Amino acid sequence: MKYAVLIGDGMADYPIKELGGRTILQAAQTPAMDSIAARGKAGLAKTVPDGFPPGSDVANMSILGYDPAIYYSGRAPLEAASMGVALAADDVAFRCNLITIENGMIKDYSAGHISSDEAEILIDTLDSELGTEKVRFYPGISYRHLIVSGNNLGAKTECTPPHDITGEKKDNYLPEERMGSFFQVD
Image (cartoon, rainbow, N blue to C red):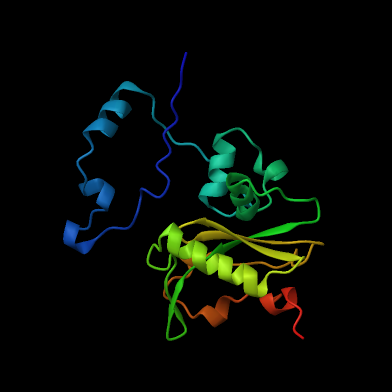
């Protein structure tokens, strides 16, 4: 028997006034999805265990049979694995999103959905200008990139995903351990 697991990550969206208070998904014509749902089994499952951030990283790990209580240590190590970046036992990986800031506010969590080619130039420049033996920048896809620090540098730093705080002042969400502590200033 074969199974297909379809994960509608992010499909819920918010109601839009112009669509009569419906979401984009509610207003969409979805004959293929309707056909699959009619022939398969559909239901609800709790994919994010209590105490974990409600994100696709935790949910997908859980759906695929990996207990987040054992295997989850954040989104960035998953990004590192997907990018082929090997992490040493004392490495700390951080997701490095390119964002748009206007007047001190986070205007867009994706830098206008920057192209991967444009983003690679920026991340490579950051690595050449700020990277050290202890801190490296790795280009990823579009706005999603990676910073890896060695020697457990920054291990206690907690960061807020930009998509959770779009429209907010960036200064209210800077991590307690500032990025300045990563770099030696001469």
